[in-house]
Length: 540
Image 1 (cartoon, rainbow, N blue to C red):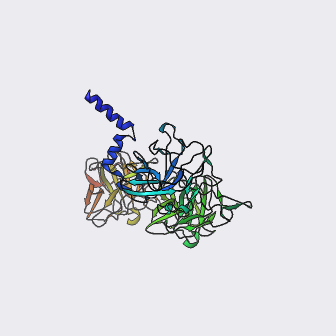
Image 2: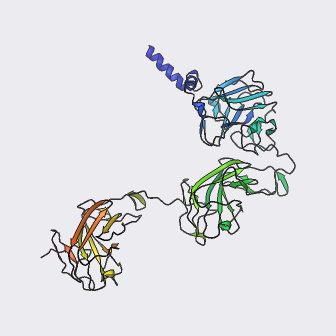
Image 3: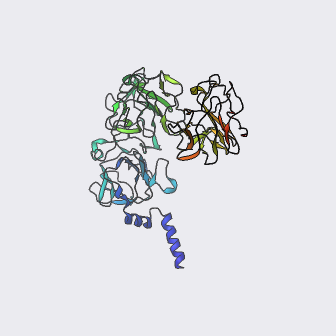
């Protein structure tokens, strides 16, 4: 019976996420020690929903740490401004990504609205509508706190959206405002921006907003997650000061008034600074160029210089808040960096150029990145696979012409290798006593069949090489007429080698199927003797 009770108790610890078992475990581990003051910022409080407060209350938090955070063990509290009457909730099983919002509220777990990320249930009771304070702590360490004197029915209190969320900024009551007119309802009768960039508190000031067909309206600012830097040309062929550009994709409709680009979050430059509204549609790509000549279409000005070497970044922002950031290292002249549809970072393929000697797709959808081959890999019908290299005994040097007579040595020398297994030529190396040829390198798999006689020649042109009809590969090695050793290898492994003391003009040396060495007797091409690329006859 005791074992059954222990099983039930363990199950209860798993099911009751905010129950005593989970809280005791978190308290013992102290996992919230990784969260420092200012890492989480309280950015919005909806304490006074329209009608009965019920399940409509929420608190919005922003991860300002620069990395993902686990909130397990942190305590969220609500109290009067002087700290009395405090009620608290200990987080369990929740995390947030860098520079992302987390919305927590009192809705029951089984009926949470879509904008809510986490429910603290009834642990905080009803949030106070006035003279109140909400705080986040790790043990006795204060992470952030915000106080408010009053609320408006049906409207949230928001930290000024013109500024990047900051735990010191939200200490000042002047940096908070009630959700203004023009914001969509969160639920019937309730207005706020849970999970999204906050409203600018100073919108109602004269001259705020932008002009749309002569009428001033609110600016629809882009939010984190809606801005995507997709392509950039940091090292164009030509004058960098005129031809650099950055392409940004917007996944939701917005106005770009006040939009910023720069090399770091602390060095953002306003790219759109105008009174007229600058609207973009969902899915639209905007090209920011150093000049009108930077790309076939330049939509706005790029007001900072991209770097060509070392570790570099491009940051998109608004009022100091980072909306997106990409990092890259080094450049290739005339090739743009791009993020492919699968988010892989690569240089734009050197296909069609958009400008003389410059390659990329500014303002257009980026193509997929070329497949990259790792060491020991090759492409087989468009798919990468491991190179199949021969081992000792599977590749043999069977014939060579060191002293052609029909043409000169530079054009007429050749060497034949027989393969006794189905292998790839990729990586094979031919060398002699004084020189080493380059390894056979190719992205495609150079497959040969078992029994194939592969011909390597100094000159592939049959009109110049003594009449060789088929040449399979190049031979950069110069064969000596005498006292020579030829070695075939792959990597550090020697596959075969042959040595000879002399060679006769116009006569190849061959090795027959039994391993005997002799002079060739059959004529080929322009009259020299040998059987290049074909089985050798028996030696007499």
